[in-house]
Image 1: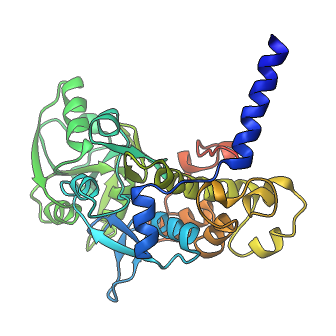
Image 2: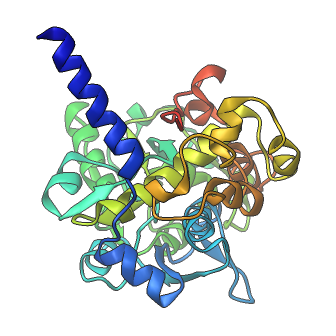
Image 3: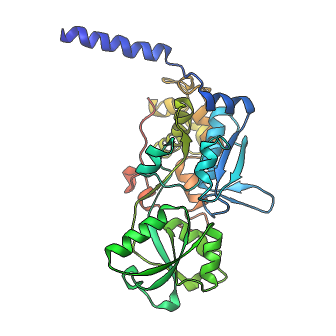
Length: 340
C-alpha cells in the first residue's frame, strides 16, 4: 500500500508539471487586456514612491509595479500610478480603481483577514520610530511623556503609539494629519515636539526639512512593520504574478544576477540561474507569462539589492543601511522560495 500511495503521488505531481498552466482570473485578464498595471502609490514619499517635476515616479514601491509590468508585458514602463493617502488606499484597491497596492503598507492580521485583500510578500522590513528636534535634548523615547506628537491618520502608527505609551505609563497629545507631507510640515512649524512613523519614512521625511541635520531619529523601534504589495482576494493568478515578481528579484540578488550582467549570466551552466532566467526547467506558463519573465524584471528593474540601494540605500539621499532587509545569508531576513 505504501508503494502504491507513493506511485499515485508521483503521477499527480507529474500531471501538474505536464498540464499546470495558469488560468487567467478576472484581474489578471483585465490587466492584460488593457495593457498596463494601475498601481496605488503614496502622495509622495522619497525612497518609496515620489514623482518628479515631469511626472516620473520612482521608489521601491514604484519598482514593485514596474517589475510586475516587466513580467507580464515584457515592458516595465507599462504602468500608471494613482496617488493615495492612507485613508484612501484600501478602498481604491477593493473597488477595482487600482490593480495592486504596493504603497508602503504594513501587513497585519486584521488587514489580511477582514478586508478581502492578500499581501503578496514583503519588499521592506520596517519598524516604527520617533523623529525629534535635537534642541529637545532627548536621547530616548522613554523621555517623551507629555509630548505633542505628529502622526498620520488611518495608519497602524496610531495604534502602535497608543500601545507604547500606555505600556510605559506615559501620556501624549496626538496631532493627526491626512498625509505624511502634512505631518512633516506640522513638525517643522513646531505644532508638535515629535513625529512618529515607520523609521524609513522618518528618514525620507527628514530630508524634506530646511535643516535636516537639526532633527534626529531616536534609537527605539517600537513595532514590526512588514511592508509589501497588496492585491484583492479572488484571483490567485494575479496574486502569484505579483508575489513571484518580488521573489524573482530576491532570488536574483542571491544568485548574483544583476541588470548589468543578466545577459552574460543567461549563458551560465548553473541550473538555478537557468531556471530563474527561463533557460531550463520551470517555465513562465505557470504564471501565464513568457519564459523570459524574470529576465525582463532583472534587465529592466534590477535585482532586489539594486532596487534597494538606488532608492533608499547608499546610492540614495536616505542612505539607509540594509539591516533586516539584507539577504538571509548576509545577516538579514530577506528570503525567497526557490524557483524550481
